[in-house]
Image (cartoon, rainbow, N blue to C red; front, side, top):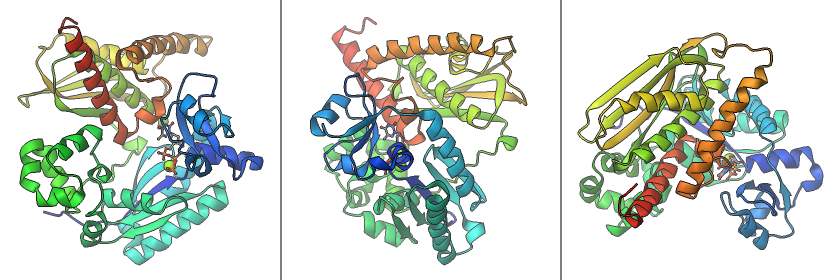
Length: 416
Ligand code: TTP
Ligand code: MG
């Protein structure tokens, strides 16, 4: 089953934060620019210019390590408000080409142009136009991929980065391009899945095709999905976020292995809540209904909802979800989801004379939980907040958390 072929454009900005800073300060042009913590602080690299990458600097790298590799770099603290404004301008341009778009990050979007382009030649022209307008109207370069499905479009946009353009028009082209590539390049293959595949002697995409039965046996449903991907089959639809159509905003996550550790489950709920808050607020949606969904290892699914929450901050969403969960049995969990609904035109948060007054405690409480989680999982959630919320990254973060917890629990003899 291959589903319906579509024409999808994936756009992704080049060295996004760094490029914005260079655009706004041309003296930085051609220099290794590193955005993130400053070298005398604790923290990591958010991103860096391609010049900095040639020194080996990478996103997520400890800033001290970056400084060791590139002491001559220009280190700049990120200015999220600025990037957000640029992001809105970018998505505004890109969305006008698609019937449906899925803005999966500040600097990245999937555009379904099947109907607006009609054929691949026209879609390629559109993609070039998107690049030109992004350069002329925003002053930045992006890389675009044009393809028949989402996975292929994403891979295509990475193929010729930076300032790239690449097309994958058919499954056959996809299979040929990808056959010798590492399994990690496929959507949904994180470090842990890659390691498990490697243990089976599967290192390349064509190995997945050659050992399809083993992959399905070892990974079940995810295995079938991977075998499909290796064959160039990806039926995921570009999912629109049209605020006026939205009845709810939710995020869910399937663990790679069933989880019985409810400390971990609660922490993952907080991350999902952060993601829901971010997505809802990006579209100006405010709700006072909160939902939680759990699928247990036996595939039984339970959903619980509550309305009348005092606000829809991440911390409130998480706390309501935690409360609802307390009344459910503590069985091994496969999937966990969190959502907000009951949208009103205005913020549900009650107006006070000083609206700032209410904001601070919620943020502080959140910071408190994130700091506890920082210690628990040795990962700085606060610093990496925007990065980790991206759809393609949350699974990796959750997997890291699960592994850290397993280590801790085995050290302490499962006493926690
Ligand atoms: P990416 O698109 O992954 O990276 P990029 O745009 O900087 O570089 P390129 O696409 O050319 O490889 O991420 C977009 C932005 O998200 C990035 O500019 C900064 C932020 N980000 C982080 O804050 N931390 C991270 O670890 C990553 C990867 C990105
Ligand atoms: Mg990018």
